[in-house]
Image (cartoon, rainbow, N blue to C red; front, side, top):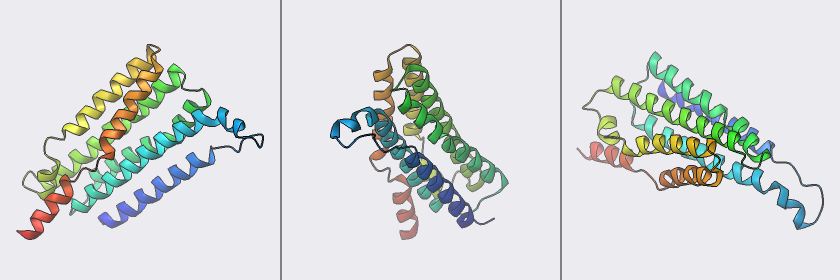
Length: 196
């Protein structure tokens, strides 16, 4: 299988994930602006999840752009990532419908943690395939941002389970904000390799 086919398939799955999430947004019952108020938690959970899916899509694109080859292990690790991302609509809807109740918030964090872990495994599989001297390995480096994210998710899950739901939600938002700032390591590494 070519890496382009893997990218197309992944893009399709992520598009479906976003479509399912937006279909969970219901029209308010009423014509006043006040009728939107009960939908605020649902909309807020949708915005955060949309942001996360966008972050994964963006980083996945850059990651595969730097890759030269894919193999069976990479295909499976990519499917593993897509599995956890496909649970975003469920976790998002439950989170919004329960107005950020502790256990739905902990489950949401669990999905974030597993998606982050799956992404790390995909990165490791690509690095194993391309070697330590590859452009991809130079771009990824120590991946501190990835490890900080996983620690943040674990912290958020613990805070949610302990009943500190707004602190947990703030941690999930902070991790997303950390990734919104573009990570140009791969772009820079590719530019440098093309110059050389």
